[in-house]
Amino acid sequence: MKKPARVFSEVIKHLFKKPATCGYPFEKAHIFPNFRGRIAFESDKCIGCQMCVRVCPAKAIEIPLSAEQPAAPAPVEGQPAVPAKKKFDCIMKLDHCVYCAQCVETCPKKALIMTQDFELSSVNRKDLRRHYK
Ligand code: SF4
Ligand code: SF4
Image (cartoon, rainbow, N blue to C red; front, side, top):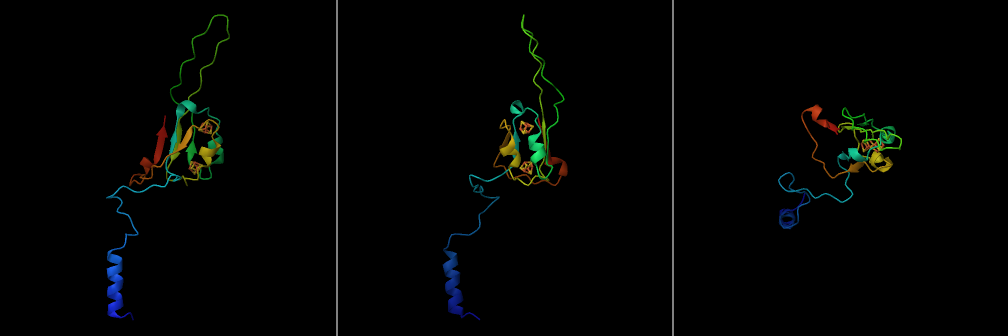
């Protein structure tokens, strides 16, 4: 058993020490630059190649065709008609994702971006299924 004087000196020492924990959520959390958070999606860059879907180890990502497709560009006289560029959405299941960044590294068009957003908890499971358009 420690002697009272030693215990007292330990208490005094810890009173003036910098705390080992942070005050989150009452204080802003310190995020490290390479922190892996929620994946964001830029629809205008996506070509629908499905490579992100294939590499995802958690089956957390789907890339369906968007319900609304852009119109084909107006035909130019004397030139073959150019088909409309297909538009894709991204469905991200945040409760399946393990934030490994495989999809981000694999995407050839940089349409998936790793953000530092970590405040994703919810009591409603539906909130964890994000549909990006
Ligand atoms: S970060 Fe990993 S687990 Fe999450 S969607 Fe991308 S590949 Fe899948
Ligand atoms: S890998 Fe990139 S471009 Fe290909 S479907 Fe996924 S998000 Fe779209």
